[in-house]
Structure formats: C-alpha cells, structure tokens
Image (tube, rainbow, N blue to C red; front, side):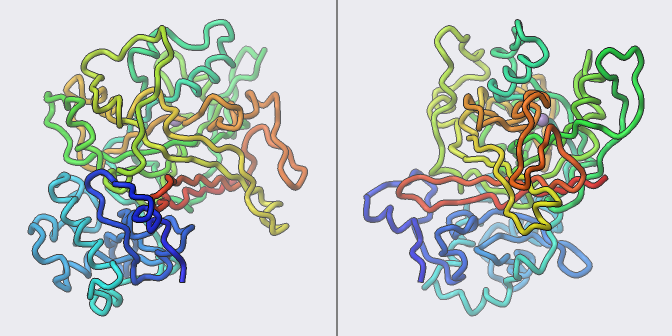
Length: 445
Ligand code: MN
C-alpha cells in the first residue's frame, strides 16, 4: 500500500492554514499514490459526458465521483438546497455563483465521503466512474474570456524581439495589460486544433497574402474562473478579490505569430488568437491551493508600488501561488517511434508580476461586471531563466534558435501532427502533492 505524502505533515508538525481538512487516505486506492494529481486533498471540479447529458464530477485518483447522482442518492443532504441543486446541474456556473460559504461545506462533505474509515464507501463507490471511460467537456458555460499579460519576463522577452532598445512599455509596471479573448472557441483538452489561415506579410514584402499560418505557437498559461461576480458599476475591492475566484485550470493560448505581428497594431490581438484556446478539464479550487500560497512577486528596487486599489498587505504576503508549470511536445514521428513527449520548459506561477487578485480587481475596477463562469487567464508564464520560457516565440527567439527534438527533427514553430501537453502541480515539504492533470492539443493541418 502506498503512503500518502501528507502523512509527513503529522510527523514534522506542520500546521496547514485554514481550511485544511487533514491528511487522509481515501478508500479509492489510486488517490493514495504519491504521484497522483488527484489525492483527497485536491478534489477538483469538472464536467463529464454522462449518457445523453452532462454531469458535474469531482476527480479522485483515477475515478470521478458523479455529484448529480450523489445529490440524488441523498449524500449531500444537510448542505444548502442551493448547493444540492447546483451539484445536479450540467455545468458549474450555478455552483460558481454561490460563493465560498457554500463551496467550503461541500468540500468538507466530499472529503468525508471519500475518506478511508469514514463509513461511506459502500454508498459512494457505485457513484464512481472511471476517468478513462468518460469524455470531459467544458466545465462551465464561459460567457466572457479575458487574457492578461502578467509575466514581466514574457513581456520583456517578447518586447526585446520587436523593440530591442525599448522592450517594456512604460505602462507595464502600473497597469495590468489584457485583451478581450474569444469565449466561443475555447475547447477542452484532447480536441484537435486546426491550423488557422490569415493575413501575413513577409519581411520586405509590400502587401500581405492570405494563407495558413507558418508560425503557430502555444502559450503556457493558467486560467481562473470567476465565482459570484459583481453587479455592473460595482467594482471588486482587492480584499474581496480571491472570494470571487472559483478555481484554476491550465490554458493554452494558441497563437499564430505571423498573423499577430501584422494585425496587432493598434488594437491588440484578434484573429491570431481567436481560432482556439484549450483548457484542462479540472478546476482546482483556491481552498485546495491554500497550502501552496506564497508571497507576491518581489518587485525590484526602483519599480513603482502598485496603485492603492491594487495593493493590500494580505495580497503581498499570500497573493502568489507556488505552482510548477511544464510544457511537453510530441511530434507525430515521436509518437510513431514510441518516444515519450519531450519537455520544452518548466516555470512557476510565482513569477507573475501581478497576482490573480490584482488582475481580477483591475478587470472590475471600471465597474465592468464579471459573471459566474467567466474565464480570466494569466498570460504566458515565463521566468527569468531560458528554460522557463512559456512559448516557442521566446524559446526559439522568433525561430532564430530552433529546438531539437529527440528524433532529430527541429522546430521553429509547431508543425502539423505536433501535440502540445501542459502540466501543472504543487509540491511542498510536509504536504500532499496536488496536480492539475493535463491540457493537450494536437495540431491538425
Ligand atoms: Mn496569451
């Protein structure tokens, strides 16, 4: 039997901040393996296809607990009627709208139901489905999608390629930069992404041509879903921002660099990004992430302090998240040769210049209303080191320094048949590791 990493906590005397539910085994054996992304400490939410309809599920090891059927079976009795109803919905929006005072008791109940020795195995086991036997769908009806640009390393690396003497624009350290993305083309992990066509203009050419992009890229990002949201005209103070975040997922902001460089001035990205965005299916809650919180990014001396509406002591002390993020690629030839995907980069969400709370507060600061299920994203997560660069544009210096794959193939940008895989996980001594699962997409020609 495998030991849960969390048992170290008891021995080393670590105390986890509220709302820790304790280190427990689950009676679901696969949830106790040290390398699982989904131990009983995680309990991320997703939506899976169940017969003719969809159901909310919670990941536990290699299984999914069907919350709709759990509600039907009376296993959620005692929680608020709103919570029970929301768990029976075919998408997470109703649950997202309820807020943390409903999320926490649900998390507590799910932990009790899945805990070894809790006496619930006989009643709950028939409600589990095997993860590899069901298809995941989008976890929420995403009304709006906004993508930020919160990694100063990414902004500086990209800026340097286009403006060597002036990489970082003067607004960067004051205002979180973002653009309004396209919600309708967000797809869930596993769906193929078609290479888009668009206008591109070669260096030295007078006029553009229309055709398939020749510089298709991925962007390693973290998405976060809005919870209750705000009324139009009523901003969200920074102190309340995290209560408006339901949870996080991995996000690949596919980007066509040649289309982007021709179209982006003066209004920012448009068709270079709106053709597809892939998200991982499981939403890891802020409560699951509590043990992995970290101080916000340490601004170098000389950088301005954030304006007061983007600043709080709590956010400075705990606004960061120690989340390791990795990108892997597998070409068609690699898959046919039985080779494992090759890692292209490994970074950390702690490298963001702005915290998620600052991004959300800024978004609503003009009175713009966020709605349950809205998706916000970090922007490409890059760090200070070369191996922490979160997209090919940076890794290959716009194609000048191609990447070599284990087959001997080289890549400046993505080729048809390439599969991009994002992974994310949190590890800390004395605490059970949790993970995000995977965000996958194959480029189709
Ligand atoms: Mn992006």
